[in-house]
Amino acid sequence: MTDLGAAFGAAFGMIVQLDAGLLEIVLLSLRVSLTALLCAVLIGMPLGAAVAVFAFPGRRIIVVGLNALMGLPPVVVGLIVYLLLSRAGPFGVLGLLFTPAAMIIAQTILIAPIVAALTRQTIEDLYAEYEEQLRSLGVRPLPSLATLLWDGRFSLLTAVLAGFGRASAEVGAVMIVGGNIDHVTRVMTTAIALEVSKGDLALALGLGIILIVLSLCVNGIAYAVRDVALWRHG
Amino acid sequence: MEDPGTGGILPLSVDSLVFEADGKRLIKDITFTVDAGPRTAILGPNGAGKSLLLRLCHGLILPSSGEVVWHGMTTGDPALRQAMVFQRPIMLRRTAAENVDYALKVRDVPRRLRRELVREALKVTRLNRLAGRQARVLSVGEQQRLALARAWALRPDVLFLDEPTASLDPAVTHTIEDLINTIRAAGTKIILTTHDLGQARRLADEVLFLHRGRLLEQTPAREFFERPRSEAARAFIAGELFW
Image (cartoon, rainbow over all chains, first blue to last red; front, side):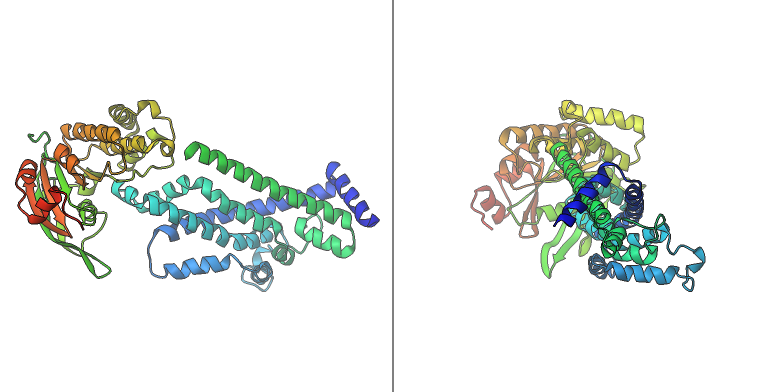
């Protein structure tokens, strides 16, 4: 019990004093997850919106596929990206394995389906409301997508958030492709896993606390933005 | 009333129009022609196929067979010379002014002209004080006025209105009907659906009477109300026609 108390004390101490090692890990985690999120949004949102709006053969299969991919096991994604980026793999020449870039690629693959599937749901609902008006005005397909994405921007925040939550919390994929190398690819989740196995609870707890606070803040901000949007836009 | 406009894409001819969904024939072999000028009301009880017919004419849905032909102007896309106002106004999640501006932008109206047209449309519909308000927080009556402003800013040759006052109170209905007449006076052909006999009497110059997917008559309004040709129309006017 005293060990646990001491660990908590040490963890808070590290956070309050902005411990250099801890800060480095937190910043790298944010860099990796936010970059992956940006990539996933750029890929997932237009894809989700297109699937919502356009009728084409095989559309249902894509919808089911996107929903299924939302639950991709991170370790499997990690393994696949590892194989692709390893020396013997097709992209081995790029030398990306065990770099933050590899982690960004793995997380993008992990969360792009989440962003796409949630975007499809949101845009499909909005399109049900807008379709006749847009067609009556003579809006062409691509501008229609842009209109729907813009008008659905506050609802789409949920999709972005879900993606960020998944990216920042997963450990399996970044562990495999990043390798948890100190000062290079060590992020919050992999550091926690390592420190726990080493028995150094203070750093693990400190990172854990930051991870939880971060996720609370992001969700809080998102809800606040949505509330303001609903109040202003109806 | 005399024809105040030049007609543009009109006259509109509908030839042997049939629309089926799920094996049911909802529009049954309808043929008619309407000219520029007189306000046309598509009248009939609920479920007669009025809204379907309007959407077929506007091109929002495609017929199972038959055709919709615009005889006027032969160059350009006739769809771009039409506008439609729906029973429940569909408002984009933008301000009132931006809703009107959006419609103009879609049709490639240059920015400076857009600003002028938006201001004018909002002024005519007396929404200028609400220009900066979010469209979706306006009352339903204000939203329907905005929908009219948005449609009218496009200066269409034809304005389709699908039960434009069905969910509005009498005072707002009066305002909307006034606006429809203003738009008509500026040269736009009005084609509206209604199940409201009072509205048809006030607004229509000619009536297309629909019953169970069939066009039973196309008659000048006054004649329709005094001497309806079909038995169903007589019963409808007398309030005896139940679906």
